[in-house]
Length: 187
Image 1 (cartoon, rainbow, N blue to C red):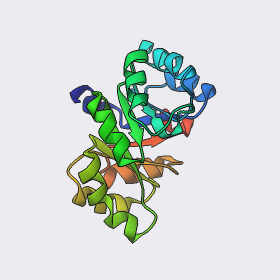
Image 2: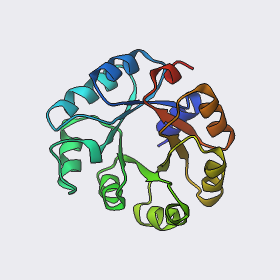
Image 3: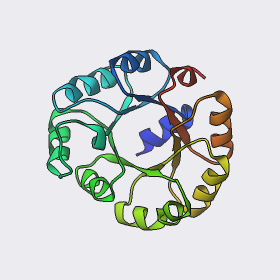
Image 4: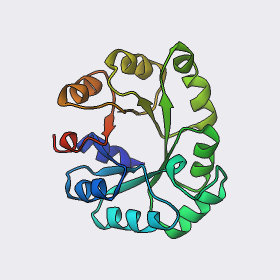
């Protein structure tokens, strides 16, 4: 966990990748952590291998990994066939399973209204993630509310489009931001 948190503190920009073009750019970037938002059971092994060879931390968004079901067996597969460091999921039960297999976990939460905001406590009490990612990430006021509510690192993700979004999210207390915007990776 320390390596993960140290990496975020040193470089709070997380490269989120959704295709091989993004992977190539992320490998050349200064980002120490990469969120993998694509792939399938065949390609994920090679994707993670490239990330690890570049000395970076790899988190797989398991909900977006094609060819898997929402069952624990996916984590056994990922543990045996990849060197992935962490898992991202929107589902509390998937975070629980990932933790059992020794993965660092990020529970991705979409904050679209007061109900979803008020549900954060329930979600993280079930999943017990290492950190949460809130989306959209360009809401500094809401980020501040979440920081006051939880005692784990918060990542702001989604619609982080320009430097101002990054600065505002970090100023509001986010530990890091994740984005597929390659221009942001070079900040």
